[in-house]
Length: 352
Image (cartoon, rainbow, N blue to C red; front, side, top):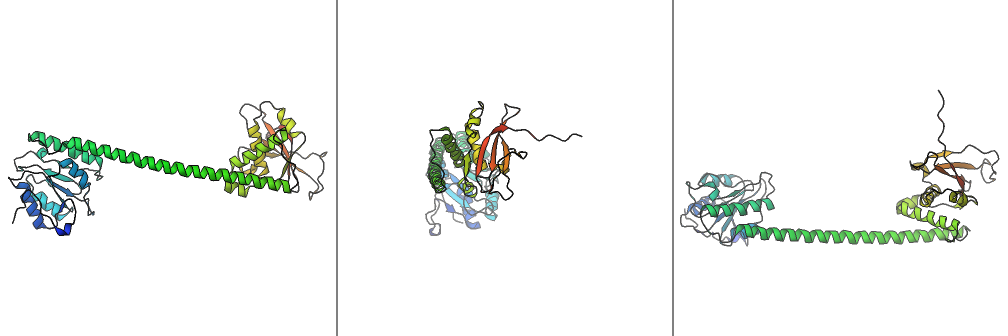
């Protein structure tokens, strides 16, 4: 059996790999000869694969940065070869299942195990924590042997950590910028869609003969607010399924709303928008209940049964025992007429 000496031979089958692949039991025997060679001056590093994997568990370039450029690095699959090396090692402790072992020069059965550090991760992750274990274990081994390492393993590990943190920060920054760009694009598309929907709504209102909305008068300002609440509350898909239908503000509606000092105009506009787009029955916050029929109410001749429908919709408020209600009529032609503000009264419970 020919010993390999302190430098590993090169193999054409390995290509440009920065390590020597141990493929046979003869290779294991020669590797054991290198470990036990009393004339060896350089480190011998042996990496293994995780079970059922075929690559080293640690990045070989990161390991090289810590052990130094002169170290001989070998790799073997976990299995019969790693067990064979363990039997031949001075202390019968060889690497396996992703772990690695570093043998300093002068390895023998009389040496202390810490003189030849082994890196083992019980979780099987073999990431930055394993490299840190390698760096500090190698530093301690050199101190025990009173040897000066070719490179400072701890300083090399800190440099790797700095590079890793910088790369992760750059990746996080790139990901954040991509998500920010996407969010801005979605926002611009939503604004564009909202403006287009508003334009189509105004065209529809004009074609139906609705009067021009003047945002300077109270009725026009409320109609503008109703439109905004509809656009801002519903998604594009929901607005397609629940369009803002035709509606009119009764002559007393705005005046009755302005008479309530504690009423929030945005909340009123939201409720009106949900009524007009027919979303009231699906919203728990809008407690809808029918008003009793009014025998003196004006009859709608367009209605099949000659009667108008009247509903009241509760505006939920925590500061009032009798919160205000929006009263409106559902006309036979589909138009909603807001008639005024009232008081919501919960249905009385039957007496036992």
